[in-house]
Image 1 (cartoon, rainbow, N blue to C red):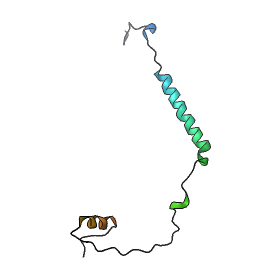
Image 2 (cartoon, rainbow, N blue to C red):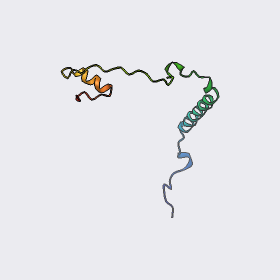
Image 3 (spheres, one colour):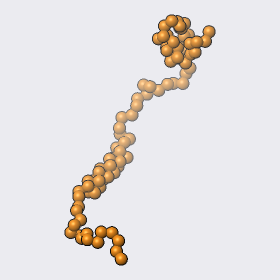
Image 4 (cartoon, helix red, strand yellow):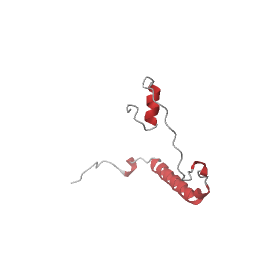
Length: 86
């Protein structure tokens, strides 16, 4: 007994280029990784412009929140304050 399509022949198989395209894409990704490992240390990095020196900064005294102005309430929330507190 045989299972499957017994009438199929080798000549009836079709070949596409997609396996070769996928292999070429994989090789390009591999090449990009090798180049990143080789030349990555030469890439520009962030400058020290955004580094903090660790000294504590003086805290500003928050402005009084006007409950009639919604933008003041949102600004107080952005600062981490409770605008409903007294």
